[in-house]
Length: 213
Image 1: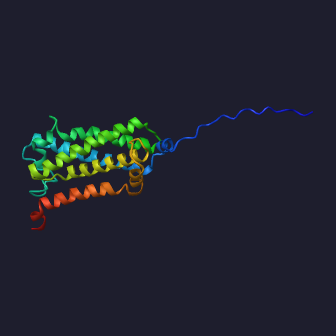
Image 2: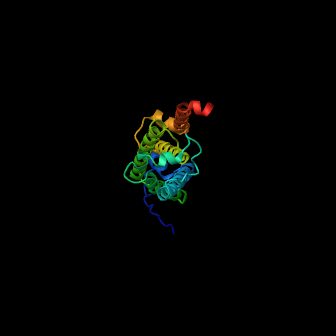
Image 3: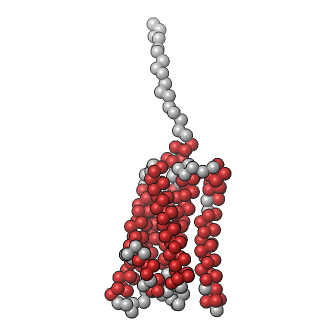
């Protein structure tokens, strides 16, 4: 006896757009970069905070990274710019860089964040790069000294800024024309390399006589 089988309608599955697919597949390289740069910034902030406490206890304390008149962490730590918001700057770094570490580790563990989260992280890195740029100008042309731990925090911050920006452009969280998305896909390494190169040239030319003397 033949049995008529009534075909059930197949559930129509809406294909995911490329935008959604990219959002769900965060590169491991980005996750590692956020975790490592966040840890580097956290380390720098921690060391500077400890040295700041020692300076408050003993005004004659000389930080280990005070190597010469130019590379002088103590000169930077005792400047007015070192407490731009009324408290030592590295205390802000202890919080901000810890958040970045958590984001990176979360991504490595499989977490996925929505677009608004990436925009918020991008905004935070924009503030970080702006603040570090201001500190860099103050250090080079007002304080006239460099702090090696501060330099580590600068580099870590700009690397995470460019990495998050490139990710947001590629995944269309930040609206951008196709050529710009293609540029960040193929040459995402170029903007941070150029940025670091500019900072290096500024430091080199600012104390050219000292470095070459």
